[in-house]
Amino acid sequence: MTEEPLSLELEDAEWPFEYIDHDRPIARAIVIDAHAYFYFLRVQRTDVFGNAVTIETSGGGIEPGETPTEAVMREVREELGAEIEILGEIGLVSDCYNRIHRHNINHYYLCQALSFGETNLTELERTRFNLSTLKLTYAQAIAEYRRCEDSKLGRLIAARELPMLERAWGMLGKLGY
Image (tube, rainbow, N blue to C red; front, side):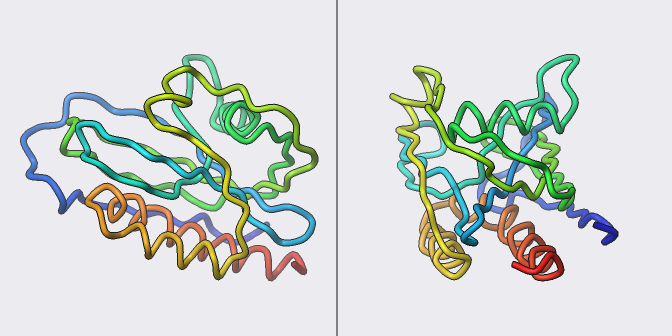
């Protein structure tokens, strides 16, 4: 992949800015299978962000000593139960969650699912976020992000993820999907 990675800086227009007290480096995957289906997480939560049902890419915090690519492979294995091949870097999104005073540095990768097995979700992911897997076409994924924009959190996530999904779709076209 020779295309320059996308770089976005987004602001949180949903909650008032007070201060940012920490940065969180995050690795995220847009996962596709051999039949051009995409894999996402459905998140159902009631917490400081409110009551929301959202769609989100698989991913999470980069642990100390871990590279973004190592983190994305670990997160996809834990959340989707998938072994993946990284096809390329999609881009970087810098955004904030004013509600929790956090700056996110999201590294996005386009990944091919090689196989699926058991997930390894944390207790918090199973009970508080009620994570489940969504298998969608590109058009269904776009529609699902739009549907989830009925909440503040859904709008923040869509603003971050839709441009990355659109870039991934373009990258896949160049790969012959």
